[in-house]
Image (cartoon, rainbow over all chains, first blue to last red):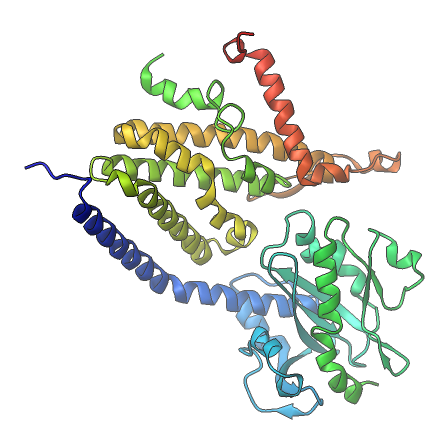
Amino acid sequence: MKIDTNSNIYTFIYASVMVILVAALLAFTAIKLQPLQEKNIRVEKMQNILQSVGIETTVDDAEAQFKKYITKQVLVNTKGEEVKGNAFSTNLKAQTRLKKEDRVLPVFYAKMDDGKKMAIIPLRGTGLWGPIWGYLALENDFNTIYGAVFDHKGETPGLGADINKDWFEKPFKGKTLFEGDKFVSITIYKGGKGAAKLAGDTKHGCDAISGGTITSKGLQRMLKEEWLDNYEAFLKKNKK
Amino acid sequence: MSKNSKLLSGPINLNNPITVQVLGICSALAVTVKLEPAIVMSVSVTAVLALANVIVSLLRNTIPSRIRIIVQLVIVAALVILVDQILKAYLYDVSKQLSVFVGLIITNCIIMGRLEAFALGNKPYASFLDGIGNGAGYAIILIIIAAIRELFGAGTLTFPGIGEVTIIPQAFYDFGYQNNGLVILPPMALIVVGIIIWVQRAKTRELIEEV
């Protein structure tokens, strides 16, 4: 018997069976691969945190190195007081949706091989196509930047995506977040390489990316009103 | 030439998906700023295209013609999500680099175009060859554009597994040579495609239309 592939009933059955089969297949794969994917994300986070204090790790030794260097993980609120909770698994994106006074903010403390202590502050913001994030390592004075790493979900390759490149991150080293007692954070100057120097801001200024203006602006907001100013009270309290 | 080898070699020149069929231009603009994502994208598109072609070809006699586009879309989308999930689990670095572009494979006109034009009316093996051939034709153009754009835009070439290789020596820059920022921007990709089409048409007699 030949089936009429153009009948309504056949079309309905065909569509339903196909959808159920495909859904089952995709759900099965997603659940099977989830632990592996989550481990990748966790390891990457550890690598990023360590990278901000200049420690390069491989995928295999990241967890051991993280245990070795990161001595303390705490959560603070926007008044700078310590609160209870797990700093590593705190979801920054969820925090940005809360009212400012309800937010809890992770801080990681690292002790380097030479005994220097660092405070690492995670960052979270929005770029052109999606979220951008990073880690800012501060020296013991809670003012001078020791290192910065940034990363992104899907900024334009070759343009905005370059925020995770060395040449963009390196200039942050040595810049300070405070001018006297005033929290000024870092300003990103438009105009390509050397723009911050031209503007005469060598203490708190860094260069934006030509062609990556919207990403650079997002990064700017992340370092000021959108995220880093949550830490203002905490930094002021500890500042030396 | 045998029919099968024509399926493979045709799309590389005479029937190239980008320069002759003018399909898949969008991704030719998006992923060609650097060589590495262009190569990885080419490989992924070829794999998805060949697989989707085979699956649609196997099902071609059962697909109700009124919902055939939907069926094709579901097959392509499912394949792309599978590729994405597997990359995220086993090749995390590559998946981060490709980011949104993996999802964009679904909307690549070459895939729907070949499914509709070829796989629905041909046997699985021929469809498989057609997928590989069109993938290769797409890859060649993408790699040429990416190489030109990265070389003149950034002075480097990035290969998967090797990383960034600086091609233009520092001495050039010392003499005042500058990277061309325009080459990085999307319009330049279109201009390069245009130049490739021009060269190809000037060289290939079969492509020149009678006036």
